[in-house]
Length: 220
Image 1 (cartoon, rainbow, N blue to C red):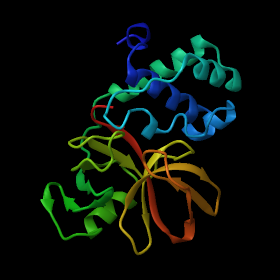
Image 2 (image 1 turned 90 degrees about the horizontal axis):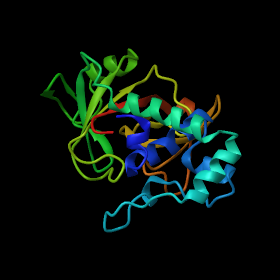
Image 3 (image 1 turned 180 degrees about the vertical axis):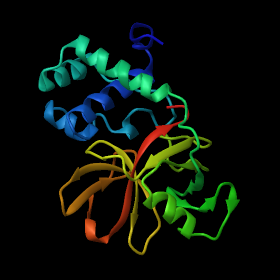
Image 4 (image 1 turned 90 degrees about the vertical axis):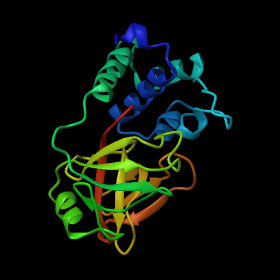
């Protein structure tokens, strides 16, 4: 799909905004603030109405983020096209499916399709700790509208996560959860819900078992 043919779709324009935010190492909220917009303007939760109808960013808001980031429209389109190609790329080969998401929490960890006890078992620890990609099923509607039920997510703990990236994070003593990373230092990470809304929560890195950046999803 070429940029010119896809630029009019709802998914393309929002993916383009997300790509620009990532390029500037910002969250969608951080990009909105940089452009002098309402910090919630680009939150995933604002991209659909409560009835599920798509909401589109205004031409004015696009103009403001381009001015704030010193991007031309052609550069914005090229960056978005690159992100679109990555989004449509096939699932990486030989990725073990080791869990599923229900109630916005990763559970049901299993080894290559064989269900195991709830919690992070030894096999899952080995896969995640090894840094290579692993797959998680989205088993309910708890991550909508960002990820719908039935999608497969691929994450990797050796993929560098920056502000604006969606991640799976496993705090000590708790279950792994999907979150949006909005800031990080060498000692702390700041996160919000996967939809980009709610109050940010800070965690000390010493109390986090692992963070894995979501690098691919089926269907977007």
